[in-house]
Length: 473
Ligand code: BG6
Image (cartoon, rainbow, N blue to C red; front, side, top):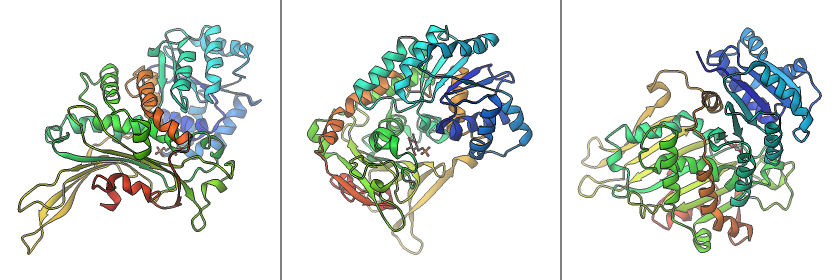
């Protein structure tokens, strides 16, 4: 029997709730993975009752369900929902919430703060004031969790006044992707990889998360964030952790967090000069029928916010010293693709040709491909061939989507797929010289045509080391 829960959803009428959280909870419900008594206590400022909120989910959440839809299952799912009108800043509004939660005494109470972070302090203080900070309560924090080290710390401190770190779940939905989690078994469960996964055999590593979409309707939020804060500080750095960390002492939260932290603490510090030389930022410009970023709705026409960020870094530890890591992310790029590429050193001698490359694709396909040298027929020369493993076909079983998987982990009280405070702060501290340089406009902001691989200047990052991005290799 799955564990019992009550899920308290702040910001329940918002975009994330309708597009991701409620559909994910439905999918888990339909798969029989939610305790039958588990409730969803939806909170919002809209003047609705439960029936009104359910009608809203019918119109706005249902369309985002990714698995087969079943009307009877949906009806049963919506019976879990209770809607309460609540203004986060009004302490008195929390009494009804406390009564609703305490009436049932569920084994775990998951509080999901799907609101802007400026409301976190009031939400936590008011929850504590009505006794909703007992050890059964877990609090899920949705990004953006700060814009730099000091604001990230301020958020953790405000929440930490009322909840212990073991009750706090900082969500990064990339950690809910099966293909990302697969990196650890791939690396440490296969003796054919681990001995080669280091500076002796690896020439360079690329991590890319590219999107074809623009900022859509999120211009208002995005313009205050940009690619570095929206994707690189969190999703890409988590991809880096899983790619480069040492084997965890145990495959549990403590072991994994310790290994990630050790890796992040080994990032070679950047001076402001390194940050300028080793980073590229860009903004998409109009191309054909596609608008440029500065023409998007809610984006100021003079905006200097980057929609593309690329970075070269090194890791100062025995495994990786001297190996360049190239990271990049962008909107309105040539294709939607999240991938990790290890470029191995080329073999010497008569049979050496192009070097082996291991490409781990997180999306759109979940695949692992290894390029190998094979003999070209009718010739003594070698040629490169790809050996590809489709992860979805290789391992039978239902692949839950990222939010669904992470929500189940919080309900079960498992923290390994969440970001611990010290990890997040180590990344922010390391990024500080770059943030300062970009804020001071010491790095050019290039235009790039929508639908491209970003500004040309980004090609120079690997080119300076004699390398190329994978699509050009
Ligand atoms: C979110 C960002 O965290 O991740 C969005 O805020 C981005 O801007 C999204 O589009 C990408 O997620 P995925 O899973 O589609 O790669």
